[in-house]
Length: 160
Image (cartoon, rainbow, N blue to C red; front, side, top):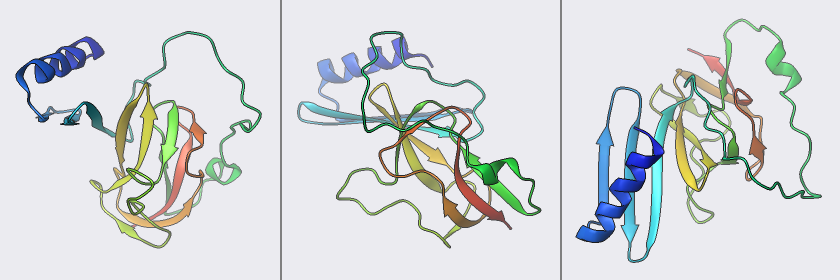
């Protein structure tokens, strides 16, 4: 499913008055919820997705609070039983669905393959990231609200 098809679904929802839509295919799951004139788009993408979702080219605004992004040095080391959950796209990392909601996971929490570990926002679309591995969260490598790159390690996990 491409962006054009998603936009068509949103337009149909507006015209028909639907407030919720969900579709699940082999590689992804798409949920769209509308509350009045506000709409929220949530997609679930496996953390091992092969194609990055890049924002369209356009003017870039420099922000003095941004810091250069580099993978964690620990991510370069091969440690037995340790895996990393990596970002499947470029975007902004969030630990919860909204500031009022509890975080998806915490350090020392046990996770399954289908556990939602975070959200990466790309092009105003909130993408729920699944763990795609079983284990225990050892470290959260990114701070809430920070930009992430494709393939950047987000979590350090002890596999079970």
